[in-house]
Image 1: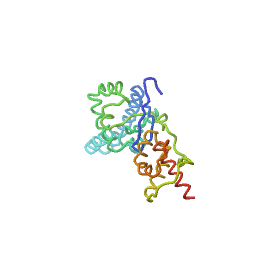
Image 2 (image 1 turned 30 degrees about the vertical axis):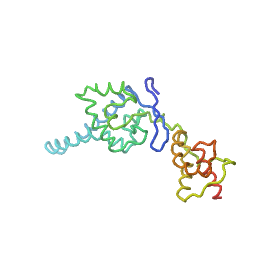
Image 3 (image 1 turned 90 degrees about the horizontal axis):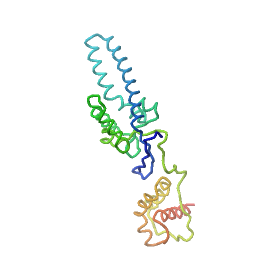
Image 4 (image 1 turned 180 degrees about the vertical axis):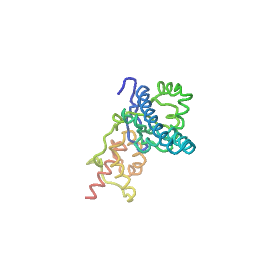
Length: 240
């Protein structure tokens, strides 16, 4: 990670904790310069092709293609190449949502629509000031679309992917009350999701389930998430 960049911990809607490394001003400027080079080569090639079609038709086709390159170059690469334009791919960067999820079409279009505000009069002052001083190194388009530009290789889950459902073997847990099929499936689903959840998020989710279970079997000493894991263990034992 470059000096001046800082890690950012986020939590996805599913409760999965992810640590992201937002890219700072210098490397983003380099990626932008590379992309401008690619865009220039593309525009030159389109100019040559349009010139072969005659002055009038070629001129209007050139304007249409120039509009498409300026407005949709970044959008298309972000949507179809996992958030990476050529410049970002070369330097190992990626555009993601504010929670670390893949960028959506609406967010990509909005952040690139505001690129023209960030680069007003081609001075880049707004973008430079915002990226240099804002948390997560966001420019105006990133704030509006809730996106981040991060180091692709270093952004990783804080919790490793689960190898399988997690259960808890508690001999003194006792028996489970009568449960419906849907309630049993909810408990087992929690056990499968548990390895991806932070402890606080796991207890938050479990609390909604254990209230009626504790009425029949209090099992003191177990947290809400531990209680559900023990219940899942009992259900799995009964299925054998």
